[in-house]
Image (cartoon, rainbow, N blue to C red; front, side):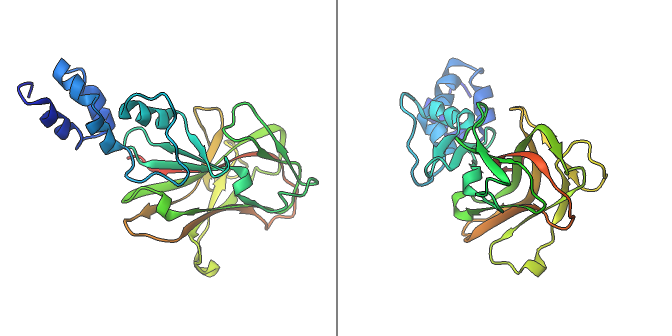
Length: 256
């Protein structure tokens, strides 16, 4: 393999994965040179970037751009949407800011307030003061996503010092916008790691200190059109809920 021309090695590496390319750079100087080439890393960058995308300045190679998008999500659409790449595949990931979500009574200061936290990628977060009727909905255009990829949507959140009313599971759903509501089958999820009920999927703590709970999965095929709608709600039990801080809804590929 070391006797192959560097451009042939680069072509072979471009048909693998970012992880394989990084590992191959330790084989020899020739492999390292090929593994660092723009030809290889262009293959892992999206063919189309979302509207409003501008590459960060000061990145000398496509490899630098790739890992910048993996580790440092870019804010788009008036800072209401973050864009990044999944490290092992290069597939597109997004997170919708709370201001880009439809939060029932979200603009009523009696029920919700808008705050800032230093560990958030968005300027404003939605902090629940108190509601009986909880409903959070987001929509994303499916054409923004990578083709032939299984995606999942997650509510990303944390708690204030005095959460209340979330020990029972709540409803989560994900469906193509326009689907008749009678055909939507919600699942039950638990926002707390130690809920009062064993029913439903539980939230998990992320490496960044936030919690996430899956709202559902969908497969993005080439040519798919329309919007994916995701929601989390609890509207059937007449008791108050408070203490939830919403970071956003994240859509990212499901890893094997």
